[in-house]
Length: 138
Image (cartoon, one colour):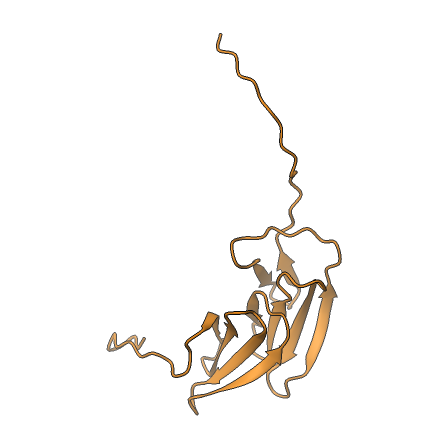
């Protein structure tokens, strides 16, 4: 959306993509494929998409300096957090999550970053047990 004119333009070839995230400098946008197997990068200057990462993609998040996109592996078997450097597409594992119990929202688990790039996750410490309660009115 052009903030000056309020004109809305659809980004070409964006059908089937979700979780769009604009880079802090406004040069790029990332979006995941609907099946969660690719993270795509759109460059506004050229109007082109490219594949940034091909693997299980959960919640993407730009670093504050715009040099990296962090993401978790969603609901894959190998739970981890990765980051990919935009300049050279270098993929690095930041943290293995192992048996870390996360709060899972419909379709995606939230992930954030601290200003120094440390991941923020919501831990599920609740109980999944079901109890019966009998209420007797006084």
